[in-house]
Amino acid sequence: MLFCSRRILSTLVPVLLCLGGMLLTAARVQAALPDVIAKIKPSVVGVGTYNKLATPRANLIGTGFVVGDGTLIATNNHVVPTTIEVDRNTGFVVFVGTGTSPDVRTATVIARDSEHDLALLKITGSPLPSLSLSPRPVREGEIYSFTGFPIGAVLGLYPVTHRGMVSSITPVAVPARTAKELSVARLKHLKNPFVVYQFDATAYPGNSGSPVYHQDTGEVIAVINKVLVQTSKENALSQPSAITYAIPIRHLNQLLSARNQP
View: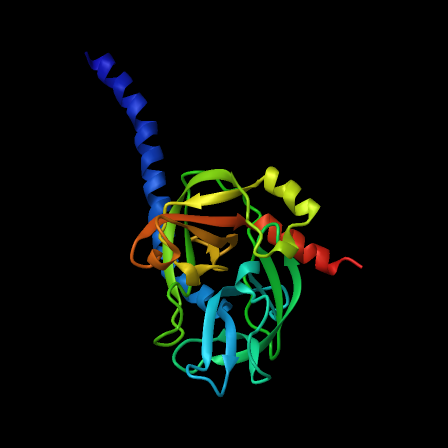
């Protein structure tokens, strides 16, 4: 009987040690998250248009985040307006900071990847703190956070953080916004979709372009791309599906690398 008890104990000890280690790791991640969010927020910006003669002056379309040398902004291609339907008083801009009076920076599109719904912007002014892009692989079951502007800037620019689990790594295709984007190459890619991360998290239209990052380091693993709308676009706020998709960061790395090539 004593021998049997020792055998059981020898089996349980490694299991308990493993579980204890997992709990300690989870606790460390949760303890680090407030500091990581504080570090992330200065690098998360609003993307939209600005007209000083209009009411309201600012129109927030989506979210972006700082990469590279601090003057580059990563966001979704669908966040960038195809045309600015205004007079000379309206410009394409990035909103920096928090509160009711954010800094407004003029933005220029310098690179696009319509296949993976990514765009790179160049902003005026001094460099901002940039985020690091993660080299680590992503696995189903892992939990990440993302920060952005889910419902716009009605009351000011206040970033919001959510978190979710990678529920699936699944194929998907980003549809073309206009007939001009339906090239032969684009149609080929639509028939052979690429892989994205599916999260069991609630995101909203304003989250498009938000960085998805490790909760312990803040390294970015993906860019929020879209949410599953259950009924209609108008009901995306009142009836969220809690299914969100994100573009793997390797595609942003490729866009950055292509820009630096002669």
